[in-house]
Length: 124
Image (tube, one colour):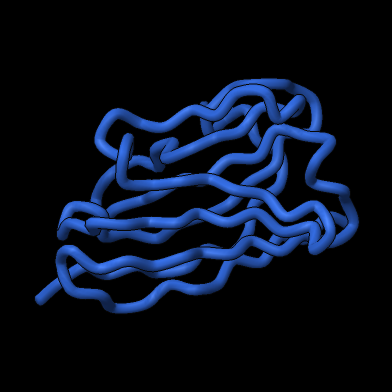
């Protein structure tokens, strides 16, 4: 059974940093496309950063480029989203997800299994 568990969320001041781990069980992450998504209050879930199944390409949404970084620790079967220079508009629930059948999409409807999400609040 595939399980994804996010953690690391919390309250942070603007300009601060957080690192969100997503630990997987029942699946080996480095074989599949993995994505981080965000859902802000009243908004649709959006792709934040996604890595292709080959690991050869990583997508970042424009507003995250230069501030967020996606990494993977295959030994721990865990992926991470490092978020720096956080802004109030980064507030939302962050989810990791896995695409078992595709290769490089960062569209939420392509992803098959989701974690429960972790709340990130950026506020002074």
